[in-house]
Amino acid sequence: MDAATIADIHIKSWRAQFTPFLTPEQVSLKNLECLQWQARVVAEEGQRRHTFIACDGTVPVGYITGRTQSPKAGYSSELDQIYVLANHLGQGIGTEMVSQLVARLLTAGHTSMMVWVMTLNPAVRFYRERLGGVYLGERVIPDGDGILKEAGYGWDDMGALRKQLSLIR
Image (tube, rainbow, N blue to C red; front, top):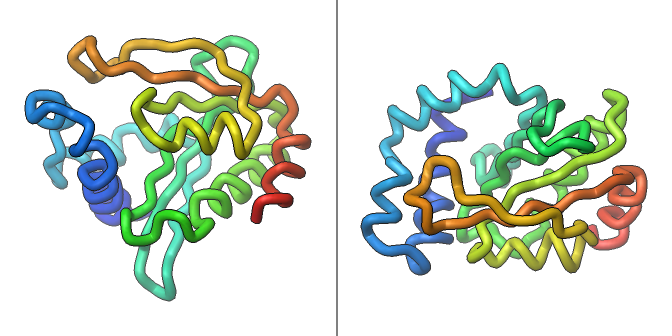
């Protein structure tokens, strides 16, 4: 795992995807300083058991992380973070990374997975419509200002999710 690479991808993709929807105050709450994000990635690595970095040739363009303990009862794993640089969106990179994460989690014996996604994120449609995630509810973003919300989506059967992913790849 390269904390600097993950932090760089996270910051660039977050700014490109969310800055148009948020107020300057909401963006500043995210604290998008590269060194602080590197430290956060390193500190949180113990919670993430699976990390994949996607490359275009040798250039990192996205990453995904998964936890093997989900904070939502009833799910054995969680897609924790997925970010793809803006100029690589729509090329199937996210789908491929989710597929790799699901395969790894299934191999590790996990049968269910969930994800939290910002409600204003266009990726909500990806989880709900393309991957068939079941809506689990909403929560206020823990490190936000109380205004931004996330929706949870879950898959009780990751084997079925794996089949769905193979159909859209």
